[in-house]
Length: 181
Image (cartoon, rainbow, N blue to C red; front, top):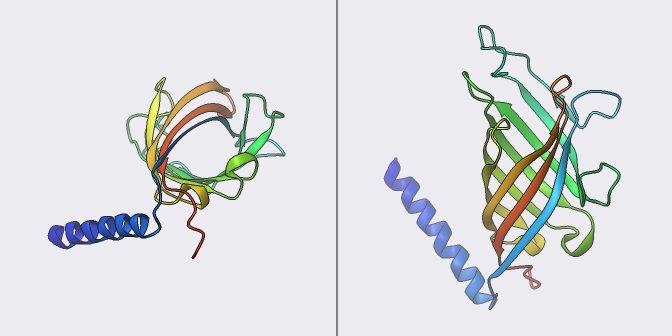
């Protein structure tokens, strides 16, 4: 089983490199900086829990809760600053002892240079830690063949509602859009 997985991964890597070479693409590095606004309360909630706390779970870990999100990404920390896109996906509380989230989301850009492009993030987020690192596992549009990482820092967190604004520093290597597809 492990050898099949390794073989599949190596084949995927070879095909990716061949496609980039075939289209004579140059590798690019981009640094993006924006704010992620997650609101699970109120009339304009952007994240909706779809499960409840697991039976017997430590209440401060939120273990078992899954939320679907469509959170705005803005240029500044204020919700009314320039909208750059949306973080769409889900997060699941996977830690039994501490708050630890599995994040699976698309950062879909709707403005500026990256309008129409998407970065896909899949990784662990421990929101009570000062800095969290999550991997970028792919992308579309200008972010084709993307890989990199996101550094997340909580800008503000309301402990009563759990609504949060999170600063995102994104470092990504990509090839850009292939025009002849």
